Length: 507
Image (cartoon, rainbow, N blue to C red):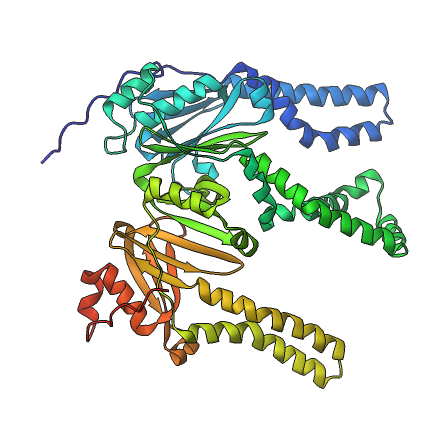
């Protein structure tokens, strides 16, 4: 029996009409190829002794890059044809890549400094295929055309995608729809939270490591031999004061670099609701707008590091089905105050279930043992061998591991409010996942030999979004089974010999 007829798609100026990328992209392509041409051109000039002939060959190489860019632009077209997008490349042969519009999970609009200078943007389609090679990219179209295309592609999807026929008609006709709802805007004053993130703090050392890697890989091209490197290392070793000063400068630069890196990636971060989608836009130099289909959002994750937790700030990600590169595309908020992040999360996906239920004391003993015992063994072996310095050094992380173990234990917890379940664990990176009940696809209850001796289990909720599974680590045996039975009684209760114990007191 056939279902109801699909409504005809709203007319679009792109229907069946082949379109080209903006010709202004020809000003960008040669510049982008310069880094790959730099070393070959330098080699040609050095080999030719900077003679007129060597400059001629270098000019031919640059001209070849320009011609290649022109040919690529002239032989590429795209068109929206009914319920699909076609990317057509016709040079020696003809290749047509077809992307069904109902496969499009989101559309990213990115503009680098060069693109912004020329009024261009890059359109990237997320089809949930799990790799960049399977996604469509239009590099580049005008900024206005990018916004129009995004509206057309998202609005022309199959019914049930969260977009109405009226919205499709507005998008294709260029008519402004209902006002957007602004969920979050990160003010410049919150740049001070950037240095609290470990990834941003290590930027100076990452730059030094990158420079060292470049020298090791390309040093010989510039006359830097192994002998030169050894002499330089020996000179630095003979001047420890200079080496110490460099290390101090790098450490002092960490908070500054952290704030700058935070600003570069998250400047003017905004989160809006627009026609069934959440649109997150951010970036100082390169602006990026990511669209997430709201009906595919299955929950969210709040994460914080040790220092971030002391400052009361967290990061927020959406758990989205079929989302590629979820670590960056799924970001709903950068480092922001926890109260603010929880308010935004409640608006877009529901409140945080709470309070969470504490896990039994054997979970604390396991964390104390794993944090302290290995270092005590190292210290004992070193002391037996007469290495007192090593023994004392091994005792330092053993002592520091005690408060870390207590913090890891306090982070454990799980909860369920009748609509959403939540699990939390971790210390150096503590993550709390909140998942909608309908998103669950199964449970996995595992128990190692050591957990069995302590009466503990790990309960993993299988979810078709995010990382695919979220665990209540080291819960009590009855507690873990009771949690699963509470969330999905029809799945678990038939397998129980007796009803699970009542829920433990909240932490």
